[in-house]
Image 1: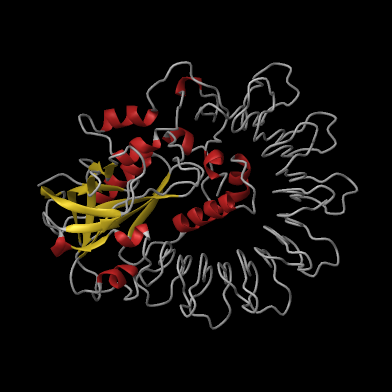
Image 2: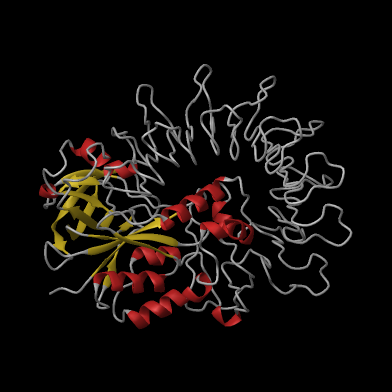
Length: 535
């Protein structure tokens, strides 16, 4: 998801504030929760979100300093023929270079007289001087020139064009429309990442993304060998086995990422499995929209940050040593998505039915990893809650607070999150942490108190998946790492695990059975817990 951070800055119409003003989230927090520290998880989201509310026009918002008139801004320089909806210097423009690097040259509107029409990413990543197409060019994303047999919506040389090789490598050959005579039909990523010579499909092929050949039992919308297929292994590794439709008789139902990241030999589920993402098996108490071991295999994989955060409640005492790795749900570039004010977030569609509009608004390619993340987040948020569960997705701090209060039955609420201060000021490694003396205190009033836990999701702006967690206890735990790192953490303990799936990673890591004793986990830094008042 190399572009996802950059894309996450694309709100609507950007101008740079001359002086720093308080972020709307800060204003809201100070008014709604006076004399209450803002959780680190929220502070983290404000680092790259410089919003100048006074200059909002319509549904525009300033988020950062490098997006130049994204969707509907007035021409920054009068007389600029590039018109509106131009990402003029998206990532970084060198002084004196009017286009700079990473330019969406005329994303929504081409210059008059430019035969390439509208919605052209003219020099997306970097164009060499005198090379009008450069490398990493979306040559005719939404509209092909007349006479180009490849039709519309072609990413003509997305990643790299070799000299004299008109298609190059990493070509989305017929994303929206295949040539007549191509049995693979429409919406095929024909050689997405790299096609070996003589291998018409190559590796990293989305073999039948939107439409499968007749006779292919895997049905439609199958990522057949997305990342790499070993010779002789028809599924390979990193396979989205039945993303939108599962074979009849497959109990995993529909929308299953069967071995998304890596399948170990002999382990049919592998690691990083979305086990029943959009639909769970009957009898699975987790119901639908379950990320059922997304980041790690059912068996513990050493070095997996998620797996290190589990522990037993009986071990939550001063002097206990735990090997932990605190991380954030972040984009590949390492910074958070912007946190939008409610009035801006509510003006932006948040629905699978509006997916094309969402992708267009944020300049996300429909076949990209960023688009997959958007689809997954929307799908998770739209799935019905499980029996006994209360869930919602929040696109702003204000909505997250209001909805959490309504679920807890009181507006006298507070939010807490984990904060880790690395000894060297940088990222925190996996290491041994020790529970400090006097470092454990309860956050909830009683053992039966309910919490609302909110998890950050990958999206073009900050989105939280929140659910009310019954039969839980929450603790504030002070930890000290072996390198001196100090962590002020939030731990949530689940006191009733009897109905949990026995293959859940927590049981594998801790070596206990469902219902045997309370299972706890530390929250990553960008997750939140909302709790009611002490009684």
